[in-house]
Image (tube, chains in turn blue, yellow, brown, red):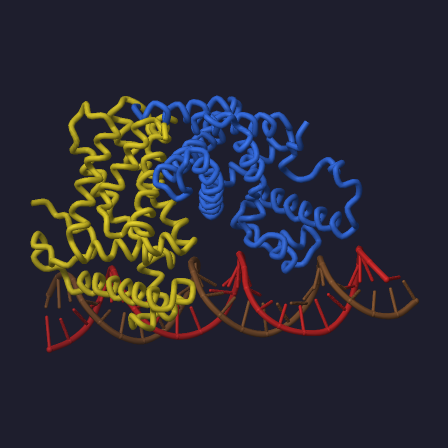
Length: 212
Length: 212
DNA sequence: TCTTTTTTGAGAGTCACTACCAATTGATGT
DNA sequence: ACATCAATTGGTAGTGACTCTCAAAAAAGA
């Protein structure tokens, strides 16, 4: 069974029997900051929660917060999914159509995330913030297009193109736009439905050439 | 001939023979700020140009700059295209496929913009900033999704759906993602080519169901 | 235990942006 | 031309997200 724990390390990671005290403290601090932040955001709202208060709540100095997270938005948005997705995509069979490959990767990724209650709860919280806070939404877009470039590179090499070919870029941009809309639809309209069903619906719209 | 001058008012607008002095000064101030900003951005870079310096260069107070433009990014990004696009889209024939309608609207809009040297130059400058400055790119995305919602509403009413239907949202998101990629490809790879050709290429990828 | 390296906290500074108030300036009626 | 009213402007004092720097504290390693 592969390591699917893309979120915060809940299990101590059996592969590295015992990291040094320094490493453990770093992980602990990072987690403390994020937990304080999420709780305070839920309680008082994102804009009404200064970084200083998060720092105080997590018992670290403001400087430390910015050492762990380059911006306030990054406390919410982690790009821990990127490498997992890239690995899974590379593992898909050679001749498979790119859109099918991406769909399968998304299924693999999201089914594990959504099945873990803790990860699912964190995903919901994060996407609610993406929906509500412009600054976070903006950052999420940026993060998406970063991930898109990563996956685009893989798809390019599989279809004999360069990563910056227009076809590849439009492909990834459209796919991520569809995923984003599916996710937004999920958190604001149908939080109890299966996100994967919504993603499939969205991707199928693309497959049909946007003939709505 | 309709009023296609979506950018700054170069022609004094014959329909309103003579606006008050107040109006004229406002337009003048707005333009002065934008011109100072664009020049300073090109000279020293966006991040290295504080709003105070723009204000000083345009001979207004910093407060005035923020009165005219809610954020520094908004000095660069105007959403003057929105209403024009909406009007043109509403003018398309009833039964036309949405993707075709949008394509025609884009042709109408961009052919007028690209043919006016001043507007074309401004478009290039703006898109270069979109490419280079994360803050502006983020804002451009936001602006795009705003426009997308506007057009989505029109498309929804034409296809007998609600504006927040998943199909409509995925449609507009994918289309604007494609336009954005085409524009980015244009400014960074082929600034001498015809932008409309690139947009058509991008839209055709969507039409083909992303079968790249 | 002693030394080296990493991590932390604290202080000062920059910059985007907001709220507010007083002074200026254009519009309007007589 | 003049007085009055409304809109526009400039200045001042904040807030909050970040950056830089440096000395104190804490962990790693010998």
